[in-house]
Structures are given as structure tokens and as C-alpha cells.
Image (cartoon, rainbow, N blue to C red; front, side, top):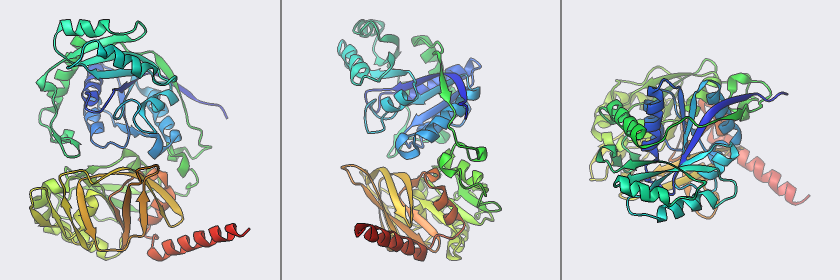
Length: 469
């Protein structure tokens, strides 16, 4: 089997820590090159939902996640290959600090041979800037850090001091000035969503102009990306794990997907997989529509229901239609904010409580501090599915859990998974391509507590028999 190659310039934007200005700079660069007539594809490292939307506004194209732990190398490789086929430039925004975590930015960039450009906050330093750049370039032997951009620079003299502190083999690619107009509003889960910010296009064009004025922005050299070999089944690309599901088990099924300001945390890959499995996706707004559309099943992703308590509570016709769907045993997937919406009540951080759908027994209250964060996996029956949690609420769901989603390593973060009337609910934002077989059973209404218990018992018996052989 021959290997297909696609060549495209690519750049991986990283930093020594979070809050260094990566998202702003990547969005500005994407808009700059788009304004030059280039087709730019942007990716975000990690399971982030919010930053990619800024990149979509900036570039005019869908922005996908790249995460080795959640997605695996095969899907990441296929995404990059497909982008390289017709893009003029690929930009990848890193996550946290350059070496933070097992599946960090440096590892991802090294795996796919993408050169790195580091954004270093320099507002309170001089020659130490060079030491940080040297450390980023040399901490691991497999790093290709060709250059740095200084951020929050006070003056041209300050910029020259920073430039002179660098080793000769690290290029100084620019100095971004301190500018309050660059600041983006934030809230408890990160930046305010791009779709909520007025005049976002004007802000992006302004940021692009400032980047062009203060940074060197030649296109990097093209590099080669290889196609993931999936042995046929191209209609399921880029999901090699789904290649055996050639019969498209969800053919003829319509899945209603909530999508608005309150429910917006949706991986593009999840929708692509559902469509690849044969389903028709019908979007609706729990905030604005009177009822959910006619559908075989329902997908309630995460988001910010706590910011729209009164709107959701007052839309009783929508709540009634969703409760009717669930009470009739129709398949439903509810993730994080979607699960909170299905509970009886939700209380925000200032103590306001509102009635929600009431399809799941329990209530939730927003907290001042983070309550859950991490990459998790759960064994549901004989299947294992992966996802990510990030929430500020505490909930009391009055149901027995069918599984525990847990985090590998020392931290051991855990989240309960519930199954009630064919509704699978948890705090986890599932990455559906990690287990297409389970996804198919769920949306076909064939995932029952009895089948899960049987699968667990069979697995336990098999393990015990193995112990005695």
C-alpha cells in the first residue's frame, strides 16, 4: 500500500505557560494570512472548545482539536493530512506550557515534524527572556524551536534588549506591544465565547494589523504530512477505529443536537462521526426554539446553562418536549452542562435557582472554584470511551452510576456515569470517535443497564477463569 503525502507550510505556536497570549496571536496570524488571500487551517492542542471558535472566525474554516491522549496519533495525523491537501498554511495552537502534561505541545509538534514558535511574556523581564527561550529550545532533544515572539513589550528599547539576550540559533520574530485593546473578556471556563463578542471581526483585523507591524511573518517552509492508512472505508476517515462499521448502523436516524450560546461545547469530530455512521443531524436552540425538532435521539452537549437560567426555565415548551422525549425512552446523550439542564434545579454562583427540565432526579449548584478537570476514560459494558471534564458545579444526581470515568496517573480524578431511560449522562465531554461501537448502540437505544451488567459479569468471569489457567 503506497503512502500518500501532502505538503504544506505549518507552524506550532507554543509558550512557557498559559495566559501568555497564544490564542490572541494565533487568531491574529490566521486573520493576517487570510487577509493576504491565503487559505489557513488552524488546530488547537488539547480538548478545548472555546479557543477554536476564535480561530474559526479568524480563518474562515473549521478548527479541530489535536490531542494524542484523547484522539490518538492516527486521527491527529489524518486531520493534518487532510488540512494540508488544500491549505496554504497550517497553524497549531499549543496548550498550557510547552512541556506540560504527558501529551504535551512539544511531543505533538515533534511527532508530526512541525517547527515551533514560542510566545514569551516579557513585560517584567530583560535578559532572562533569553534564558527562558534557551530552556524551551533545549529542555528536550527532539524540539525544533526556530524562533520566539516577545509579548507585552514596553518600548523599542525593551524589544532590542530582549532580542540581544537570545542565542544565535533562535530567531527573534517580533515584539508585541502592551495594548489593552488586545484583551479578551474571560469567565470561569476560559474566554467569553467568540460568538458573544460584538465587533469580533474588527478586533481580529486590528490584531492582524498590529502583528504585521511588529512581527516578521513570512510563510514557513512546507513540510510533509502522510495519510493515515485505514485499509479502505474512506467514508469514515479520519476515524480508523471506525473502519469496521461499514454498514453505517445509524442510517435513517435523525439526531437532534442542541447548539446555541448555552450549549456550544461540541467537538466537530463527534458530529462528523455521527454523520459517517449514517445519522442525519438536526440542530436546534433550547434558548430560542419552542420545541426540539422531530428526531429519533437527542444530543445535549456542554456549555453555559448557568448563564441562561431564566431563559431556559421560561422556555417551558422546550423543556416539556425534551422531557417527553426522555420519558418515552428515546436515546439521549447529555454531557456536563447538558446533564445539568436535565436535572430538576440549577443554582448559579449568586444563589439564583431555576427549574430545569426535570428529566433526571437531582440538582446542581455552581461553585466558586474548579470542581473537575482532566482526561478520563470509562468502561461501559464491554466498551471503553474517552473524554474530558472541566466544570465548576457540584451535582447530586439521585441515580445509581453505571460506570466511573477515571483519570490515568497519580491524580485519579473520577466522574460518575448515569444511564436512565436510555439517557446517558455525566460531566464528561465524550470524544465519540474513541468508541464508535458504543456510540452506535447508544443512539440506537440498545444500551441498557441489563446489557451493561451482563457485559461486566462476562468480563469478570473471563478474568477469573484466566486467573485459574
